[in-house]
Amino acid sequence: MADLRFNGIGMTSARTRDRLVQRLREQGICSLAVLDRIRNVPRHIFVDEALGSRAYEDTALPIGFGQTISQPYIVARMSEALLEGGPLESVLEVGTGCGYQTAVLAPLVGRIYTIERIGALLERARERLKELGIRNVKFQHGDGAAGWKSQAPFGGILVAAAPLALPEALLKQLEVGGRMIVPVGQEGRQELMRFTRREQGIARESLGRVAFVPLLGGKG
Ligand code: SAH
Image 1 (cartoon, rainbow, N blue to C red):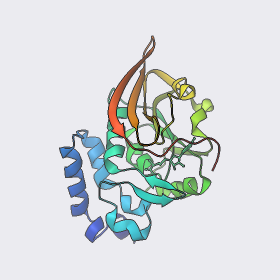
Image 2: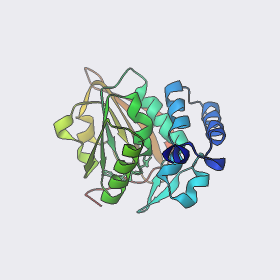
Image 3: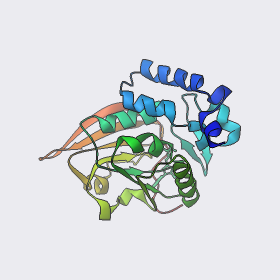
Image 4: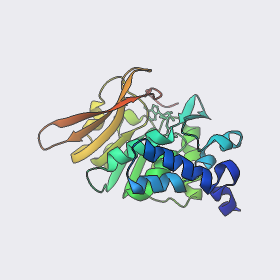
């Protein structure tokens, strides 16, 4: 049963997923490891059954609580941007959402520490990752803007909701050589940024315009 559910049929089948992967390649995603995860992670189990047939469209979809599952292109782009620069032992993810981004990244890194402010979303994500046999993820219900001090520093930090300005507390938890991928700015005019901690100072690059939900304070 589980196999059938994960493999999918019709609009959730391997052929439909291959078309999505092809599209992401055409849009410039070149990491084979990331494309392979997009092909293999059953995105349809992360959304409501009623939306399952749209799970392999390259679009964000609602997951309840006013939140969305990120667009596959964005998940692929953020993962690729994070992985460039060498293997990652430990990654902090802020904004677990439904856990799709977590599932894509988990086998490509040593361990993920993921924080979500909405408890119900976090619990659902935890269940789905367990179903998929993903075991290298630690979950926390809380405000991810403060990071996860007891586990810092991290080789990678991935932020899935947009702060208005550069999140200093998170930058502090980045190890030397570590990189943080984060959308920064007001709703409707955000820029996806990569910050890399060097021995001296922080390097910053823009990865282009994006649209994310805002990073909010406190628990939901
Ligand atoms: N990549 C996720 C999408 C997450 S949407 C996925 O694939 O599903 C962004 C998530 O960030 C939302 O679930 C929202 O509740 C969460 N969020 C917003 N502000 C936060 C904060 N300060 N700390 C932790 N999570 C936060």
